[in-house]
Image (cartoon, rainbow over all chains, first blue to last red; front, top):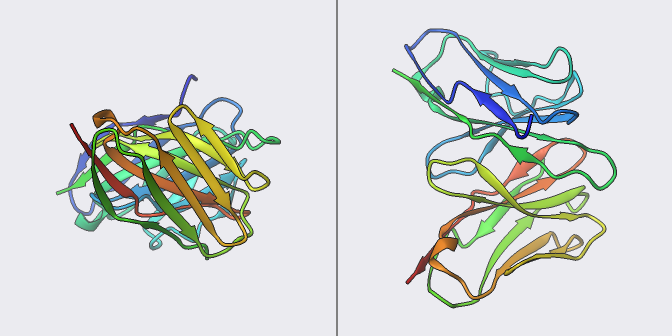
Length: 115
Length: 110
C-alpha cells in the first residue's frame, strides 16, 4: 500500500472486553513498531518486530497485551480484559531497513476508548 | 535502556523568528535519529532522518544536526511561520527499538 494503514481508526469498548487493533505496514517493510500515546505525551514504545519475530517486547505493560505478525507483514495488537487506563491512541510504524533506507513511517493511529 | 529528552517542553515565538529545538539521548550507540511533526489529533509526519554516520540533514527551512558522541541533536527552524505550529518529536533508533522524547510543543504567533 501507499502508506501504513491502521484499522479501526476509532474503537470504543467496554471495560473487560477483548480488542484487536490491526496494522498494515508499507509493502516490503521488515521492521514494524507499536506505540501507545496518551494526550500530551510522546509515543510510548510497546513492541518491535523484525520480520515475523518480536525483536523487543519490553514495552508491553503487562500480560494482557500481546502482538503478532505471523507472516512478516500485517500485525495485530491484542488487548485482553481491557481497563479504562488502556484508553489511548495506538500508533504503528514500519521501516524498510535496507542500507540507508531506515526511515520510519507512521499510520494515523487507532483511538481506543475503554468505557 | 535508551532515554530521550526534549527541551523545551513548550515554546512560543513570533512569526519570522529562527528557533532551535533540542533532543538528547543517553546511549550514543544509535543507528539513526529521526525528527517528526505531530499536529493535534493526527499521526506523526517524518521531517528529517539522520543516519549515525551523518552530522546533519537539511530540508527546506529545517536543519537537523547530530552529535552522537555527546548524545545530542538539534532541529533548527528558519523564519518560522504560523503553519509550523505543532509538536515536534525526536526518535532514536538503536539495535533494539526506536524510542521517543516527550516532544516540544511549538506555537508560532502571527
